[in-house]
Image 1: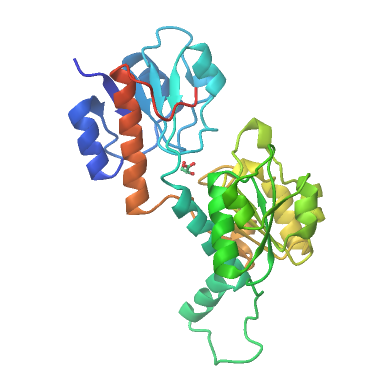
Image 2 (image 1 turned 60 degrees about the vertical axis):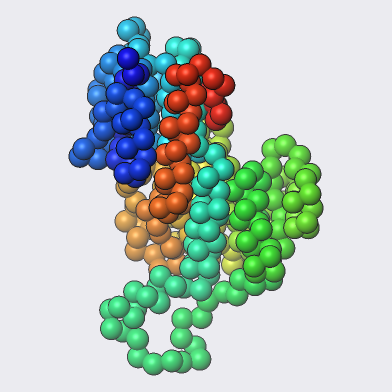
Amino acid sequence: MKPRLIVTRRLPAAVERTLAERFEATFNETDTPLTPAKLSTAFREYDAILPTVSDRLSASVFPDAGIRVKVIANYGVGFSHIDTEAARQHGIVVTNTPDVLTDCTADLAMSLLLSVARRAGEGERQLRAGQWASWAPTHMIGTKVTGKTLGIIGMGRIGKAMARRAHFGFDMEIVFHNRSKVDDAETRALGARQLSTIEDVLREADFVSLHCPGGADNRHLINAQRLSAMKPGAFLINTARGDVVDQQALIEALQAGTIAGAGLDVYENEPEVPAELMAMENVALLPHLGSATEETRVAMGMKAVENLTAFFEGRAVPDRVV
Ligand code: DGY
């Protein structure tokens, strides 16, 4: 008998076809996020769950007894929406989908950086509203990107990919903070300097891009104090997780002109985006699109397929995080 699998959101057709061949799969026809009650029931009725970042698998969703689920194959590299300690306690394996979304997430971070520095969103809004009068030497002056300093918080796969784009594409100097020492050929080729504290990075960087995981350890890593440690003309880019930034403190820093602007793809309570952010022209806002390309979303799905297949065939699970 095939293992019973519940897929919490619609996935690319090729991925759903493969899942349907290998598992007794239930798909989410309406693509509406499952309620906590439905997620809880799923733990009792299925052998595996394939969730996404839009599912909050907190400890309270794991039933106390009668759990049938043996593996959670997350669709995404970040898994801070899953209480991994609860999974561990219930003996449930958790997997993610690293590597395949590195380039597209870094591409999007670079797009946000360019967009907010060069006022691209603001310019497009003006043009579409029929308010562009004429070319003028003083019209919508932005900030030059080439040659500036980029500060990276979290020099993992995506942080390095962002650094490559910024350094080789835009001649940027790279400084970074990472909990552990990063000393590899790639980082050396970038001439990237690892600084001891986040504050050291904030002090030097014209642009700060966040690439660390979300979750309890990094909650509000960028708070009011750290925002005020940034250069007055600096920009903050967040394609990591919304909870890494104290969103209210960011709004206040932007309103007060403590920093020049922000480019955001992630928010504290997605899909809610505060009206204050939407009202600001010096903020580029995207709806969590980091990995949203056809190639990457299919590749993420195929990674989840491979993780599930390996698990149920009793093989080593490639992307196991718990
Ligand atoms: C990721 O993979 O972490 C993306 O943000 C989607 O979850």
